[in-house]
Amino acid sequence: MAFDKICVPENGEKITMGKEGKLNVPDQPIVTFIEGDGTGRDIWRASQRVLDAAVEKAYAGRRKIAWMEVFAGEKSWNMYGQDDDAWLPQETLDAFSEYLIGIKGPLTTPIGGGISSLNVALRQKLDLYTCLRPVKYFEGVPSPVKRPEDVDMVIFRENSEDIYAGIEWAAGSDEVKKVIAFLQDEMGVTKIRFPESSGIGVKPVSQEGTARLVRAAIQYAIDNNRDSVTLVHKGNIMKFTEGGFRNWGYEVAKNEFGAVEIDGGPWCQLPNGIVVKDAIADIALQQVLTRATEFDVIATLNLNGDYLSDALAAQVGGIGIAPGANINYTSGHAIFEATHGTAPKYADKDMVNPSSVLLSGEMMLRYMGWSEAADLILQGINGAIVAKTVTYDFHRLMEGATKLSTSEFGDAVISHMGASSEKAKPEDQYDELAERFKELFEAGAEKSSEFAQIAMEKARQQLTAAGAFSEEQGKNLKRFLERDFTQMANVMRDEAKEKFNPSRVGAGAMSSLSTLLNMAGSALSSIAERTQKAISCRSGEITSAGTLTCNACGHDLHFKKTGRVPPCPTCHATEFRKSY
Ligand SMILES: NC(=O)C1=CN([C@@H]2O[C@H](COP(=O)(O)OP(=O)(O)OC[C@H]3O[C@@H](n4cnc5c(N)ncnc54)[C@H](OP(=O)(O)O)[C@@H]3O)[C@@H](O)[C@H]2O)C=CC1
Ligand SMILES: O=C(O)CCC(=O)C(=O)O
Ligand SMILES: [Mg+2]
Image (tube, rainbow, N blue to C red):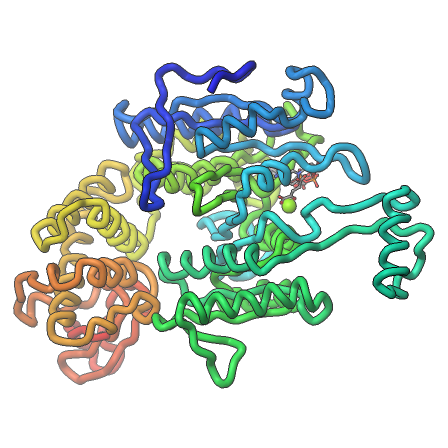
């Protein structure tokens, strides 16, 4: 396709959607970007540099993003002729449509008049029906709550309907008079309190729109071994829109995922144990603060999701660190963007936190299957925060921190990529190793126990090279992982496969390993049987979730997630056997 003002990079190739819903990502993919209005300019400059550095570091020149700038907002208005169509030119939409994946900075939306939101328009025109906003705590980030580490939620915000559809008429306009007359005369509506001076908005919520969003949320929960999906709605008041969302959501769980009602419903449970429940939006906003651990994946309507994502971000450091993605899982189209806006008072001051766009970039790299580069972004941000080198928003809340500009923070992130993370917890390192092992195994064509060993060693080497742990730590972690994996494969050979249902087995490495064992089935159960001694766990070692039984006194220790094995609390012996 020929464009007018958009330059297609000569050295890049298109990302395409494969037949089985899997993206084909070449080594030099063309990725579209909009730098954004206001602070978007500062943030994008720093972010592009960090993303390029992560890719370069991870793939040593073998892979490189061919960036293609497309235009929207103030920059576009000035370039494309300063008329109404110039805010979001058709060729920008065409480029996103053709090149599948993009990333954007924030765009300004005037209040109470003027153009409709360009951000919302992009989502609607490309039918990016899921707004995915993960909310997770980074060690060391200042937070207003006592236990920010309890917050690990993923919001699936419906992105194409609701009051955000933009169907509304201004008070006093001819259109609103017509609508009010229709409501009163044809529909018998008597509840419009001040008909002469009311503006009217319309809130469409459909079964199809709800179903595809809830389907994506449940599928995500299954793929990522999450415990629950909560449908957040205000269905007690808006019965046929928000109430419809809740009812249709439960129908998807039951009809498409085989959920059965718990204690007469409406809560229900998938065969793998994931609970699908609902909560009314007002109390949900309180409980995400007071009982954070009870929320995991959240599926909600557009406006609720907008409020909820900013509110939740506050618990883990604010919108300066809150990423997001707008995705159509069927077509593969995706635009990654921060949760925050243009923060105009800081525009062009090289001051704000670029982490939201950086982490949106991290989500994008992972979506492209470039997880090594994505890991480096996480590692770089973690490293900069732990070193207390941060932008103004964190600096004002942290003792003894150094204040950096946006671009300096970008430099700090780059400098922490690939550095040894001495402060990382061994249990997190172990989980990371298990997850990488699973990814490599999944990506390979062969599904044998020999290949499992190769994939495990490759995972160790990759993560050592990326600085996730030292050579020695990596060897130890691999030994523990090998032990747990062999032990699980042995159990799998002897007992029911359902034991390794990912949602039953607990968090962290255990979920990765169980997914892997379920996927590879009997091929892996041929792993060489080892003696009980070789697969027992000792105090001081790291192990995945499960039950450890003291060899000396029979005392049981229950691990819900990966952890370090303590001495037996009853008899102080140090050797345990494991079960699930
Ligand atoms: N997807 C998009 O493009 C979005 C666009 N918008 C648009 O952005 C414009 C401004 O909206 P507004 O309501 O002011 O919300 P903003 O998100 O732009 O800013 C609100 C406040 O959040 C903090 N903040 C925002 N971004 C950062 C950052 N990167 N680093 C650190 N702190 C940050 C600042 O807090 P403090 O003052 O305390 O330092 C800022 O004043 C509007 O036109 C709105 O429509 C809004 C949301 C999303
Ligand atoms: O489009 C806008 O201006 C605001 C959108 C918004 O707040 C969001 O997507 O979270
Ligand atoms: Mg918002």
